[in-house]
Image 1: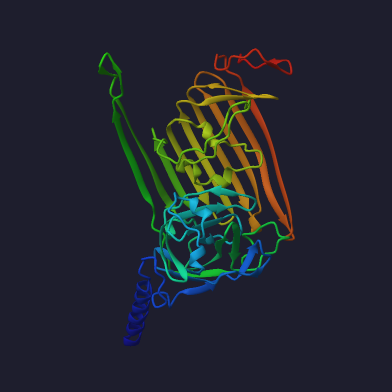
Image 2 (image 1 turned 90 degrees about the vertical axis):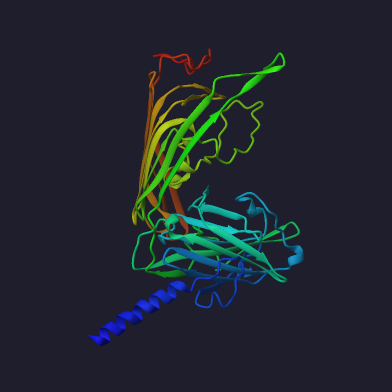
Length: 442
């Protein structure tokens, strides 16, 4: 009995000690603080080189506590030629930078890239099997500059990474470094890339081992209240209009480490990153803007398709919305429902697009995917929109990406739609397409 008690105390003390061996998060990678870390290096230049030796030495360290992962980079460099500026989020891609890519499922469905430039400005991206997606993750970054190198430290909470929780896990990782020599951009990673293989994220041989980690259940509530007056100056005095007021609430709840529930009640989507300006002069087709609203960004890879069947920006001003995302071991589910107060109505023509204000509408998006190795999947997709003042549109389809023998890829998509026109004056046009009027009619 005494021996068992001694063993228990010894194991508990070892576990407690290991969790205390986290670095001081100050942007300086001190070898003593990272002596127990898993260590890696970035040795191969893949652009413009072809698996040639990396132009600069880069040391990488990975440690973790029960709730967070810590990544440290020592990037040796010619500091007189360093390209680095204080920038907005994600603009650090234009500078020297270091990144870690994490594939928690190990099947190539996606990889989350997180990093920073030498100023500590954050960059993040979701790398998909055949493209990439804008992605924002709540993590911390700090950096420092030295005589012959710059250091970057990242603190990544486990609860921002979906994963299947196990006592011991092995996650696939990629380490990336970007450097500049004058206007020449160089990219280096930690392994030799096979350019004949279409799936980059499936190739990494590097893993990190994690034991006994905990993913804290996220419970986020974000209320807002707005009030204001506007007025015009007339005859030497301001003439104010009515007092404008608004309030709303949004939230996120993790049901477990792979399933989350989000909701939004009268959300204020104006407080997001501005759209990139587009010139609409002499443009006959409707402009396409990327989705930057965080509420709609999470899970975007499940509804992306080659034909852009889903365009969430058409949900313009929702009064209420709910969303469930499930990222399982072999299956993924995305379901979103919203009641929109100002939903646009769009008709695609041969030479131009026709649009109008369709008013209030109920929208629904449901996607299911069965996943396989190397980022392969087969999916079902359904969308619905029902306007309060009449008219509706429904689409259903199948899509997929299949990889064979590591070298070949086959992607496919097939959709069909069912549309009932409203008897409204949302679009006024006398144009005729294939014998049918563009103007709406019952």
